[in-house]
Image 1 (cartoon, helix red, strand yellow):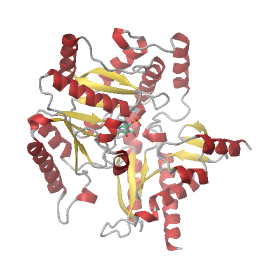
Image 2 (cartoon, rainbow, N blue to C red; image 1 turned 180 degrees about the vertical axis):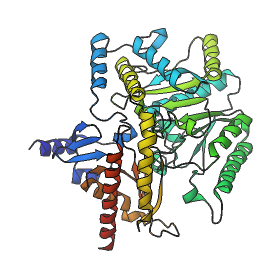
Image 3 (cartoon, protein in one colour; image 1 turned 90 degrees about the horizontal axis):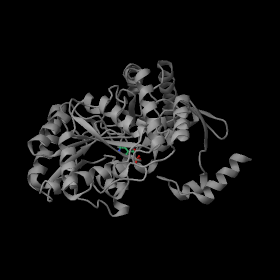
Image 4 (cartoon, rainbow, N blue to C red; image 1 turned 120 degrees about the vertical axis):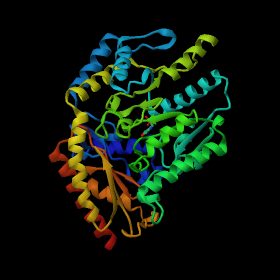
Length: 454
Ligand code: PLP
């Protein structure tokens, strides 16, 4: 039948991102053929709640007619034009205006790319260009964190702090120092309070800056709440402390809001949730609900002016993509942001998110669960072998992947990050639906426990 022949064709012709290719050849793909609201259907007709909004990204759900209409209208009017050499078009102009209106006041100019990886790559080049222009080319290093996810291009993968993105590719390829993951439950020392943990991490950052020399450190990059590293919420006071250190040592602060941005935490941007204002903010995913590939970099006046002055001096800012500010992507992005505002999806994330977090908190009593963590409409439930000692399961068991399979059986798509199950449903999700999500996850945890016992 069709789905079998599609699966065979996929095995024959595709190399998938982030896949064990040999296992894929054996098992074949899960082919998703249709989406509506928070649901998707596979090619066998089975319905799932998309508990991850695709890749943390489909804010408005999988069937928003206004995004389809915006894309079609732009295809009719002007399907493509570029933005090089001062060329411009309305969708790019209007979206940049909208982003500046929505974002913290200090961020005033926008540069577009196709993906989050390209955006972070662009940030690195912007920061280097700027420091060269300011006559301090040695100020090049980035500070990032272990378990950070900033993308997969050669430079953005260097910022990423997950071992699988480095070792097998001979990365990092740029000067970057990875600091302790700000996860109190996992990395807090015996008897250490949360405040002491924060102080220890801030001291580690300051010691690193002083050891390497502030004149060599260009920028600190971080996700306000880490996503792909396992949904990690920083300890109290962490971001205020990081922002103060960046100011003290003249280091640019970059907020990677590719997952957090546009309501995920119940605030428009993650930096608002933690009381800091970055010099540079990176946005993607929910910017267009991923109906079109699109990312944006917002910069402060100071960053913009340093770049602008130098481009005046040497004649150009020599960077940009064929798809920078793609008109169809920008038209879809603008309509998507209007929907997020009109339907108050940020408020919905806060209200329904509170219900989701309260429901998930019940799972902390489950025998397999070590920590339930989250805020707004993002969360993770981490399984451990020993609850009190927080001892992880043997990684060879691949318990997280097994539990994610049991979630699939229950009709719920989640992401296994090690033994943590991540949730990040579309922002349109309702209270009844988050109760259903948690009920399905609970049944999957029970099934996982039974499988372990067998
Ligand atoms: N930054 C963060 C925080 C991300 O979560 C991601 C992707 O998941 C990226 C950057 C990279 O974005 P892309 O996959 O569009 O290159």
